[in-house]
Length: 561
Image 1 (cartoon, one colour):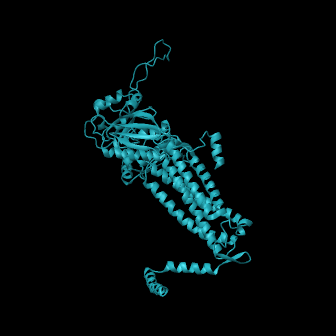
Image 2 (cartoon, one colour):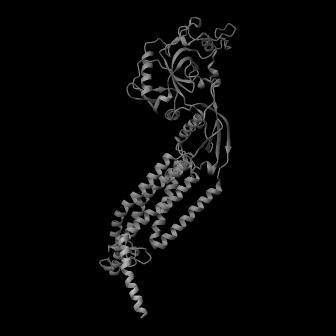
């Protein structure tokens, strides 16, 4: 792990220290304002709460970044640690509203007919730019457009003269400022492809992203099964979406171009509008485009979590200072140091020289934990350590020491039974390992449940707690036990030195030859008496006390006489 961190620092340009969260480092605050179509109703509280949940899921999908997301009036306030890149900002405000609409009309992207200033024929005058109006073969005459009620999403009755005129005047260069992503779902839509190469009149929405149950990113395979190197999105529809998609693609197969095309529209822009070659009945279409691995993965994540109920744009973006600061971090580290010192003092008082194993194991566990947190801070994982995460690391000190105590006490029990130290280490390890696994399993389960149900800083606490539990088990198995196996062969410990912490006589065992010990008679009697007392019921204890009371009174009266 040290080699990985060193290589990342030298050649990857990564930071050798863990990233800090919003409460310890500060970051960027973004205020998102909802985009509302003209005449549409205002954003409701339920829509805002749904948007907050989806944005939090999108942020959490990139790692435990400890972002804070809240509402302010009708706006959403997002506070992100550090300085987010443009891709992160786009991911936050993109509605990821996926719609499938039938293509009614397709044409050239520009509405201008002025010359472009070139003189290709050499006659001394600029040549006119080819007409950018739609292809007559693909566009119905506006005056002859049927005025009857449309029967389905592919019916040309949707193209009214007014809509045709608007389409003719529309320029894809103005798509960024258009409100296509807030167009009503039950009306036609004028929009363009993402590369602004073609503009369309699309029918109303027939299937939308709410029918997507899952989505993943993957590479496109050729007809021979070879990898083409291109990335695509593979959504999976629920039962209702699968049935609707099958009906629509079945209808489009028999239509003429471009009405046989079915457009996938993301946030008002056409990702792809392929011609329908056959009906898609399994509810698993393939959406291709100019995707990279990062954009495909990000989009699949957005589709999986769902579209925002409304679209947003960034109203403001500003840097904010740490909510707690370095003083609180220093206080947390001091608290951890004090706890560690107390653990060391207790270990030396209870286990003498055996406490050196505890200290060495804690050092190894701390080093592995630091390296793990540092590696998790790199790249797409983007883990950030908050004050709650620091608290999880401090609490883990006690959990880690618990494992050593269980192991040491098992060894002492074996020594009390008269075994040699080497045999006691192995026998105690077999008994202690079951207890350690059970205890750590319960703690890890608690951390997993807490991570799933919690949000914000509490999630960071659960994450660090779970990591340290796993590291604790690894350290006990791969370091602590081998260390004790080694020390058991050293004369200082194997001879039962009084300062070793494994002195058989101090533990109540007596030497019986061949480096073995047996419990003393007094120790056996005392242990049996204590065990019998523990197993008595309340009624038995009261009866014993009643029986002993008259004898005490008789003894007192004799003494007085």
